Amino acid sequence: MTQKLAPISKLYLLVIFVILYTPIFFLVFYSFNSGGTMYDFEGFTLDWYKELFSDTRLLIIVLNTIVVALLSALLATIIGVFGALAIYNVRKRKTKQALLSLNNVLIVSPDVIIGASFLILFTVGGMKLGFISVLCSHIAFSIPIVVLMVLPKLNEMSPTLIDAARDLGANEWDVLTKVILPYITPGIMAGFFMALTYSFDDFAVTFFVTGNGFSTLSVEIYSLARRGISLNINALSTVLFLFTTLLVVIYYFILQKNKPRGMGARK
Image (cartoon, rainbow, N blue to C red; front, side, top):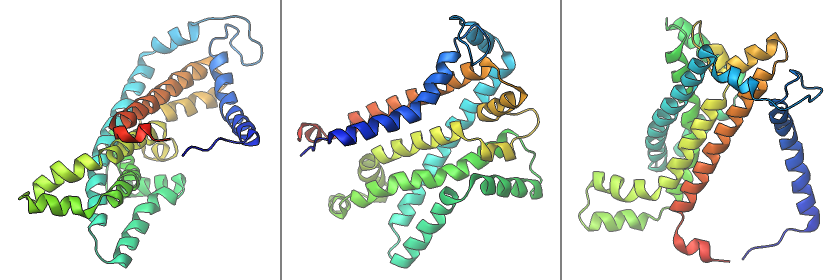
């Protein structure tokens, strides 16, 4: 049964959303300012967006960011799913808790520490900083996120489903591909989109492991901001915000599509 929110709760939620989204809408609003500053709105213009999309170097950086985000999310999802299956199949409670604790280290650790650790690792290993170092680091900090998204779905799954499949003659591969993976698909999709969003927005770790000649949007926005206030930053940030919002909307529709039909009718 659904419970109605009290008026004070609705007011509280409204205040929280206003606080969270006002700076974003302020940034988006002034990305159309012809005055070139964030103080006085002189008139509407799309010049900043035209300048943004005519910048070849910036378009290459956008492409770099998208490629790194997609590849790291895909590889982290594959590794994270098998990692979650391995943790789920551990019988000893203490061992399982130890593995979960190790999995959560990269989530609770400060990004600065993680970035510095990867920088030391790549430097000692002789790896040149650039695309590969950024991709490897993004995969590493995305794997625990995928594991945490997939494990709850595995814990929800009834063991009788697997037993029934084996009784009907299914081998281990059939059990994995025809029973387990279809059941945990919502968790897999959630892990993929979470990893994609984290990779796309990450700054701290990327700042440490990126090298000369390779950059991502978050690092580029930071570099532009250090040079002074420019509405190019507003336009770029607006595009980034809209892209992230689009990912959330796609993820929402995927969840609605995978939701059992009977659940939507319950009140």
